Image 1: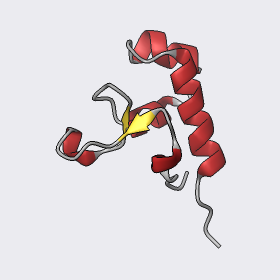
Image 2: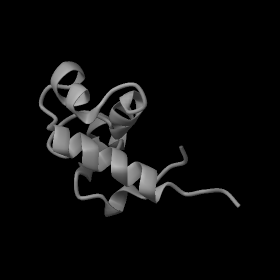
Image 3: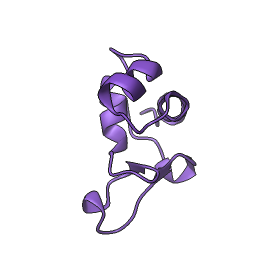
Length: 75
């Protein structure tokens, strides 16, 4: 999956100096890539309750949807 323009996603933030300036789930230190890395093998509910407690299933679902619908496609 190619990178999306995360600046347009309301569920994430980038703060200089926080986790090396990575895109994070808002109000956490959890990088967006960690959610996406688990998206093919786990449901948003599993991601939120079994893998990354503190992230809601709704937030995980919106981030996964955003990444899939806003990924840049070569060509």
